[in-house]
Image (tube, rainbow, N blue to C red; front, side, top):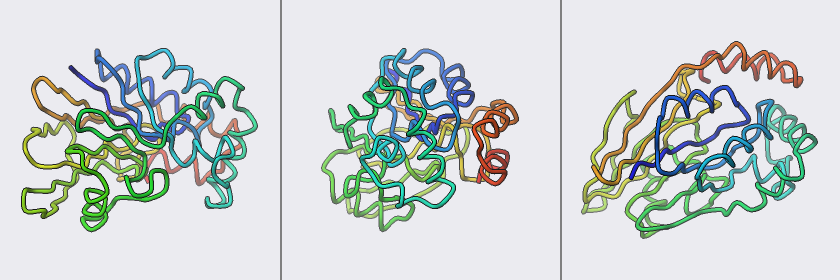
Length: 241
């Protein structure tokens, strides 16, 4: 089976559609949280997901938009975007976000936004944090989001953790090692590459593929300005920061 892995859409419908088009046919989509926040189309992004066979977990922006986390925990730009999102969410969209679990585990796979230790807030960016995440879960394959940066952490049979940033179109073979995988962000990349990021898991071939796809950043910026987003927030899309 083929699974499409996406994270941190952040209400960027143009980027989401570009990813779905690039991804092609998959059996199911795995969404690692933060469907909403920052961008201008939270309801539209949720509607798009609901058209798909997918499973999803809640992210910190999702939680804040429905009042399950305090907007005060965000910086000024993120807080204003969260408050705007909360005002425009439809009843159906809010109910969808409330239905999302903090983490999902099935058949040696864990899906979570932040980490197994702190599902919606902890960033996993270092080998030490990855080691803590591995220690907090018994599954072999952990998929996380939140950082907006594609990363792979490998724990070998001796417990040593190695890390690396996957290149575009990298294919990683699934073996006996434990893996913690971040596919990067669909709608708000922050690794210096503005292209939308995603991954595909092929369970039959035991492979994980990492991909980037271009989308109409200028149109996404125009829509963000329409919602009242600041120049700083809109301009960062062009730089992937």
